[in-house]
Length: 259
Image 1 (cartoon, rainbow, N blue to C red):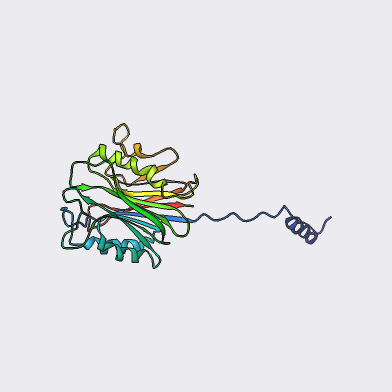
Image 2 (tube, rainbow, N blue to C red; image 1 turned 135 degrees about the vertical axis):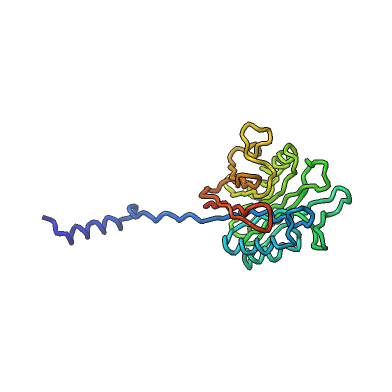
């Protein structure tokens, strides 16, 4: 009978033979995106004297996201929001144009330009902003902002689309995928992209303005049950959460992915 000690030794030797050692699986990397509409222009009835910004800072610190997108904010709000994301974070701002004046749309009380921001925790290597070709007849000319991260080379974009459904869908299709992919210098089918924002579209199967009609082949969408959505590719979906906010009329919306 073979001794237990000899049996263990033979097993260990077999495990150490070349070609038989199995490397441990690489752990998935968590990747979290936080979307918020802060209603901070000063014009809409949901405005609460700028208090939504402080509430958003607390939300960021509690959730610790890799990417934050914020809509209906002022340019002057971005420094404090970005600092809450991290010391190395950077942002790009989508400047909404005023159709009547041809200049940037302004928040009230001299708080600067109005629009949306995309914040990336690991910093930004490059990015861009612009207004859509498709616009409704209102004063606000809707805009987008995209940023390519400085470390992992993913692209993150934000936008706040028209309140007219058909125009919002046209704007969404301008952004996804062509504009988003234009910020990927590798043109690689494996590069990670995520678009986050208030799309003013709802998931409504059978509707001509169904938010799902903006999702290209190879991409997927997650929504908050209302008008906030994330559209992504080459990320593995894990879960979503919504968190109530008291100083704005939209909840905070989190989507968790892995690389």
